[in-house]
Image 1 (tube, helix red, strand yellow):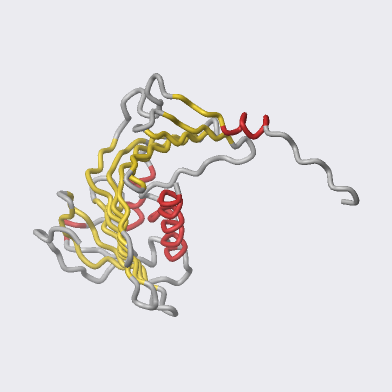
Image 2: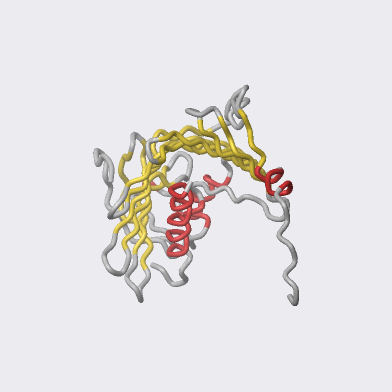
Length: 242
């Protein structure tokens, strides 16, 4: 679970870099040179599309699944994600054990499921909703008017436009490979001011409605409701004078 939380914390760091005001891979079988022009960078005549138009495509997508690979200097994390609406399921391996996390944003419920043990823990948070992070969070938080188009190339079998966002003060950079067909970043490279590099890759992307039952636990799983457990625990006695 700690590794899963670390993954999201790292994603938040990248999003923070993208949101800085004033900010400025795979197979390379197809590359085009950038040309000066409109905001977000225009390319050759057969490649006319603005960053704003491309980013808006991703906002229309409600359902998707993909494999992720997050590479840091000292560690690499990977797994699979399914997302539709306010629901999300992630699958990863933690300390040699397969862990599945299911979040239902409509009911603010999260399950942590351990297939090898056929057990799950249920958590419900009625006071705050669960946030589902998607690859489009990267393009949602950056001003398309300040990104720099650098080239077009094929990455993981899809034609992508590569954009650069740079903080002129700190020199921190974020480079995004955004698919032309759907407007989703499938590779994000972050370079910090000290030269540290982090890479997030989204592989085997599939877009569309997910099969029924994607976010359901398998039948027969023993579920422990952690909220019920907390409610049945004896309360600590009041301390006199406090």
